Length: 620
Image (tube, rainbow, N blue to C red):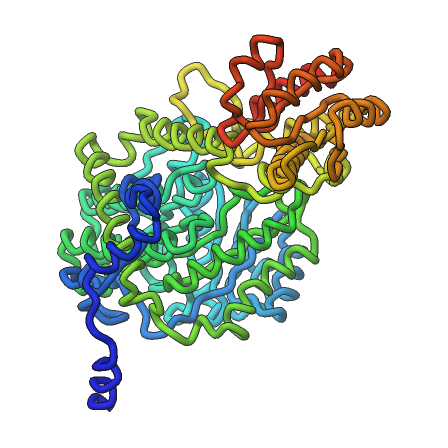
């Protein structure tokens, strides 16, 4: 076999990176290589258009095997993961019935979100008929209730003789009030955490200390931020409890990471690989009794930040690639967020689809059969180290300022994530970040206002969602990327008036078609009615047709060279009977502005702000 390989490759002369680069530069025809092909990420590093074996020859990540420290290639020797579905528990009996139903449909992990207090009898009712030795059981509850829940759950597990086989977690997260409301947890966090670890000691598969960095992902954090803060969050638990005298091995084995997944496919694969590697090195510094304590246990949830109300089935495409990233990266369990969650309580159909998205990855794509398939990829290995470097810088920065808890109380974490969220909202407004169906290629005729179910209420800690308190620090904004576009389009729907946008296409065929398509997509983002046309022989024909259609906006679509003639003629003929817009940024723009033409739409436009201005004019 080796001889055959050598003969095969003898037929191809070795090509150096310099030769490849020279070939690419020839094909670029004078364009700058770095400006044209090198991608500057939001994470703060450059991504090259091509990678070769020489790029990873000095990386240590390629030396280990799956299941070996530092676990960059995974903590397991297989790639199976738990398929989780979340259930809100208001009535234990009803939640139990739902759990039993979905366990027969491919679910292997249950995530119970407790809306009411749950006593020992409630746990018995909730878990009745569920084999806790085989099904992973997870609880999300008010941190005030976590200790009692743990006590009752451990008693139940012991009674079921499942102390050695149980897998699951209680998400004790006293930091969520600071993230959500800017208010500190009122009780002694260390005291409760120590007690939780002691209670859980008899059930080795029960983890009780949560790192919920998915909250940061859903608030718009960049990938390196989520990872850097997650590491600092985990280290806060390690430092806090070891200082209290708890053995470092026990602390590490009680930490559960709940991370988000964005749609940046390869970067997310690299994030989880980097996360395991960095966490293993952090835990190692606490001198645990075994390397197994250095394994990161990770649950991954598909993003809500990029979910949309309009063209909501696109959410299925987003969550499919996201769950695929997590599966290929070797996480321990995955929740796929139902596609309709942002506008209604998920129904049986959307929950079924969410389950099946993971089952497809397992049963048809067999992603559970191959461990770390991305290992050795020049691109992914390089991304892994690049993300690790940026996340590590952030981790060290937080630690130098006193650690994660101190940074939360000072509002520093929230402010940094909010700044990233603002930047991403601006990028969405300018289409630098695309949301298919919302700021790019919207469904022109979709009406969404009637499908939206508004819900309110209080969180379990008794604080109104979004309540402002004078002594609170900054809280996470938690506004989805599409929220402003959706508000804009819903404003159009609820106004009772749907402005008509007429495409006055004339002149150069290729340019008028390209610009009419661009402009149609541009104005459809506000829910306007688009009237497109094949083309007109004269400007007057176009204006007459626009007036006949009772257009509210007329968009002139032609070539830059022809605008100098067509635009003044069309503007004069329209005589302010509708808003007049030029599609593009022609060299003659200043001359056009001098005669009163002020509206131009092009790739540099802030789509959101432009459409807000049109709404103000047209929806009076």
